[in-house]
Length: 73
Image (cartoon, rainbow, N blue to C red; front, side):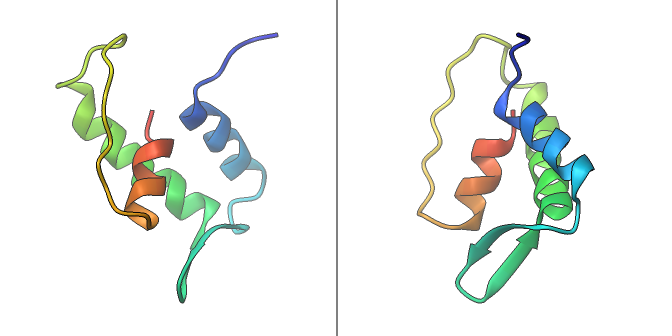
């Protein structure tokens, strides 16, 4: 069994069914493709600042941004 990060596992799901709803936050619906794109942007932004084995704290209120940050790995 190979291990995957949350981001890798989610990217695989987004490839399988990109238009499926991934997150519903209030009236906003976000597809798997859009969540994957948003989380990729966050991961790319952090990649030069955070090492592979560094611990990262996420301090965001419950909502879409928190989900995006959790998937960004």
